[in-house]
Amino acid sequence: MGSSEEFKTIYDLHADMVYNLCLNYLQNEEEAQDLTQEVFVKIFHQQEKFQGQSSMKTWIYRITVNACLDHLRKNKRKKRFGIRLSFSEPENEIHTPGEFRHPGILLEDKEALKNLFQQINRLPENQKTALLLKTTEDLKNSEIAEIMKVSAKSVESLLGRARKNLEKFLEEARDG
Amino acid sequence: MKNDDNIELLKRVQKVEAPEFLFTRIQAKIEDTLPTKMPLSWALGLGFSIVFLIGINAFSVVNYNSGSSATSVKEQNDLGEFVGANQSNQLYNE
Image 1 (tube, rainbow over the protein chains, first blue to last red):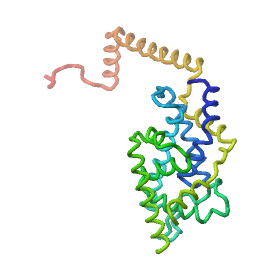
Image 2: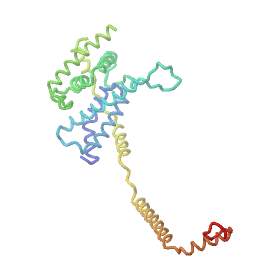
Image 3: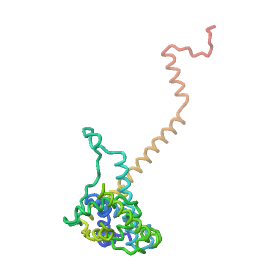
Image 4: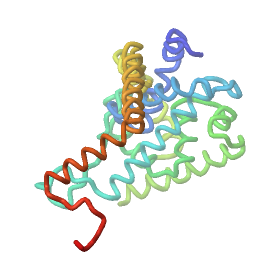
C-alpha cells in the first residue's frame, strides 16, 4: 500500500465506519471529524507496519478505538485540571469540551439518547468499547475480540458487566 | 429503562456519511507531516558554500604558518621603538 490511489480506496471503503465510530464515542460532530482526520493520517503513516496479520478492517477499527480512547483521556485530564477560557470567567466555570451533537440521532430520540450516552460515558473503557462495537457497529463477539485483542469469552463478560453497570447508572440518574 | 430497551435505543442511532471535505483536509494534513525535501539547487549552493568556507580557512591557516617570522619580529621591533620600549632583556640599566 503506498500510492495515493490506494490510500483513496482505503479511505472510500472505511471513512464512514471510522467517522460513525468516532461519533458514537464522542457524540460531537466536530470532534469526530478531527479524530477521523487523525486516524487516517495515522493509517497513511503506519501503512508499512500493517503486515496483514488481521484484516484491514480490524486494523482500522483498532486504530480508531485507540484514537478515541486517547482523546477521551486527554479530555478527562483537561477537565480534572479545569481549563479557564479567560481570566474574567468565574472560577467555578470549567470548560466542557464537546457538546452533544450527533447527526445520526433523530430528534425524537435526542433526549433519551443524550441521557443514555451520558451513562455509557461513565463505563470503564473496555466495557464501553465492547458495548459500542456490539450495539452500534453490530459486530460479532469474535470480531470484537480480535479488535480488542482479548478472548471471545472476555468480550462476553465485558458486555455482561457493561449492561449491568449501565442499568445501575440509569437508575441512579432517575433517582438522583 | 430495561437493558433490552437501552440496546434497542442504541440501535436507533443512524449511520451517517463522512463529510466530503474530510478527505481534502486529510491530504493537507499528510502533506504537512511529510518531511520537506530541499531543492537540488539549494543543496548544491549550500555544499559549495561550505567547501568555499573550508577552503578560505585552510588557505588562511597555511599562509599564517608559512608566513615570514622575520617580518613579524621586525614589525614588533618597529612598534617597540615607536613607543620607546627597552628592547634589552636586562632588568636594570647598568
